[in-house]
Length: 239
Image 1: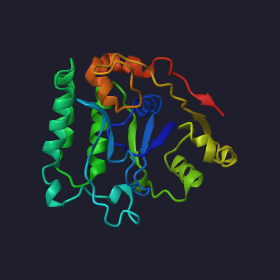
Image 2: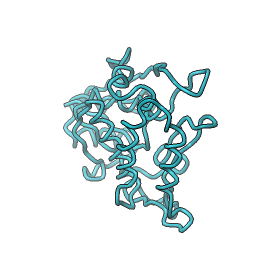
Image 3: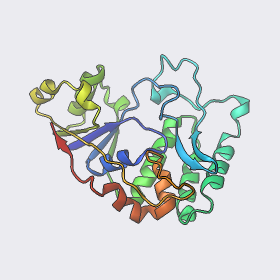
C-alpha cells in the first residue's frame, strides 16, 4: 500500500496533485495545529494586478490549542459575505481565461458548501479537482486514525495505522524523518522531489511559479493540466 500524507491546504499547488497521483491512499493531516498565515486557509493566485492571496477567513480564537479539524470559519459580521467576495475575486481574476467556464462552477460549488469548518471546503476542492484530473486515492483523516506522536513519530504512526508499505514524503522529510524507525517497521520511504513546470500563463511576461493549481487549470484545462503536472515528475527518489 502506497500512501502519502499532507495537510488539507487551500487550493493546493501542483506538487500535491502530483504526489496524490502516485499514492493509493492520501491521509489528510488534520490532527495537527492550525497555523496562522500559512497555506491551510489561503493560497496565491494571479489577479488583475499580479500575485495576490485568496483566503477563507477563520477564527483565530484558541487556534494555538486547536487542530485543523476543529478550526472554524470566522463568524465575525464583517466576514459574513466572504463567499460572495471570494467568488467575485475569482471571476475578476480568471473570468476571461479560456477554461473559466469549465473550472469556475466546480470551485463555486465547493466554496458554497454548507459548513463552518474550513478544511471541509479544502477537501471538497481537492476531491473535485482530483476527479477532473483522473486521480483517485482513497481518503483517510489522521484525526480519525487516532495517530499519536510528533514529527517523525507522528508520520510513522499514521503510516502504520493506514497500512503503509511505502510512504511518499515531500523533500523536507529528509530533514526530520527518522529513517531507522521506518525501516524497523518495514515501511519504505521515498521522496517526491517535484520540479515545477512552466506552462502558458496569461497576464505576465515572466512565468510565476508556485501559484495555486487553479491558475494552471484556468489556463489550459484539466486534461492538459494532468500532463503538465506529471511531465518530468513521474518518479520518486529513494532514500
